[in-house]
Image 1 (cartoon, one colour):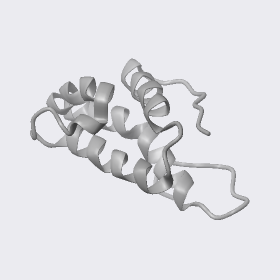
Image 2 (cartoon, one colour):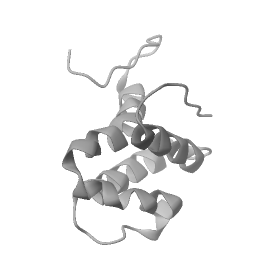
Image 3 (spheres, one colour):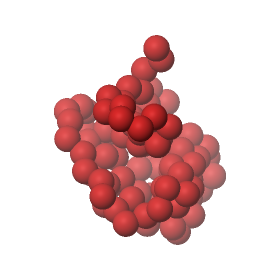
Image 4 (spheres, one colour):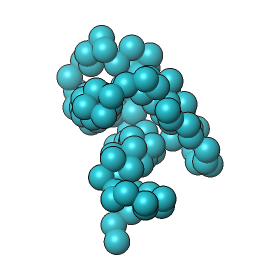
Length: 97
């Protein structure tokens, strides 16, 4: 299961909302594949992105504003960190230690 609770700019909130809808019911490998595809969508001028991204493709315009890519990627990085953390850890940080 997946849920999001947080505050941030409109881009990070929209990305988190779309992400939770898209990742619900997905396996870890599927989620990581979507993370990579979404990262490519918002960082590379590679067109529309794969159809598997579905509604997430509306975020492609973020690539035109490099300072906002971090906003769009923030919830995705949190999921990535959650996958990498050890058992029993409950805090996820997207900032370097």
